[in-house]
Image 1 (cartoon, helix red, strand yellow):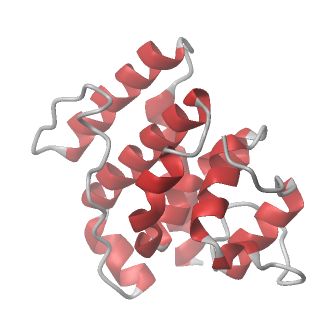
Image 2 (cartoon, rainbow, N blue to C red; image 1 turned 90 degrees about the vertical axis):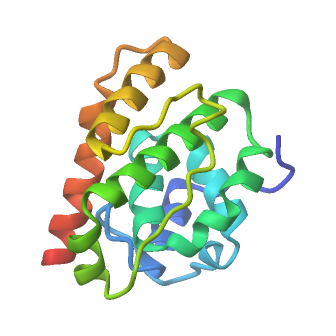
Length: 168
């Protein structure tokens, strides 16, 4: 576990807002400095007790692919439950990026290319089809978490909200 002060939900929302990630309503630039510390921001989102904040990892990586370089270090700093969340949401971002690459690039105005860091550790066999990879990830996420959440729908919801927000 990390040894830093855990940011509040408001601080995390403000940090996302400061980065232009409008996935969660609200947020101001007041006192938003967490976004300048990518590892701690990723850790705080993965460890958050709010599902909406954990899910914001997907749009964070899609809008700010530069944060991907900190994903592995952050995964080494969190609890096993938060690690699974981070690995699965990051992997979902990888395949959502592939699936929506042209649209994301036109909306964000730059190339988005996320390296696959976690599929081997999660025990996933990659295919050339991002939709199949998302399906396999969701199934594996259910197995590893023991939760019957519709993970595929959750991943797609994050991408849908992000894309609609960027279009506006």
